[in-house]
View 1 (cartoon, rainbow, N blue to C red):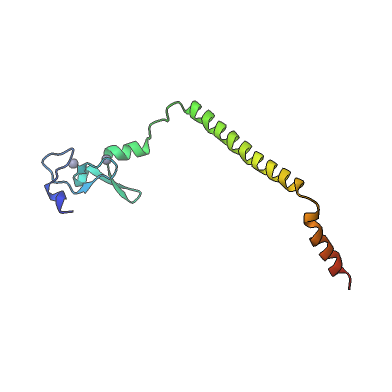
View 2 (view 1 turned 90 degrees about the vertical axis):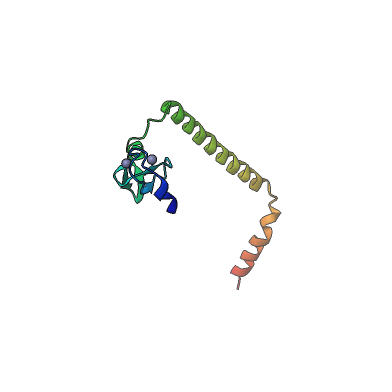
Length: 108
Ligand SMILES: [Zn+2]
Ligand SMILES: [Zn+2]
């Protein structure tokens, strides 16, 4: 942190910087930074975090999200559908051993 000595505040050119904002990477003096949720950020970045810019074309984003959900569920349904088909096509002799053993064990 020795490099901080040579840095000046982004807002106050005469003041030495004491912290570097992790969001924008600029150096700031003690007055210009605020601790927020365990992190020291500058006022500009804090304001941007508290009042985030509205997501552009949110309606399209929601439609896209819904489309992705539908596609994902359809994919899952298809996977289980074909899995069931495969299980149904298995020959019945595949289970015969188990059935015979169960009936054998029930008899004393
Ligand atoms: Zn910042
Ligand atoms: Zn400052």
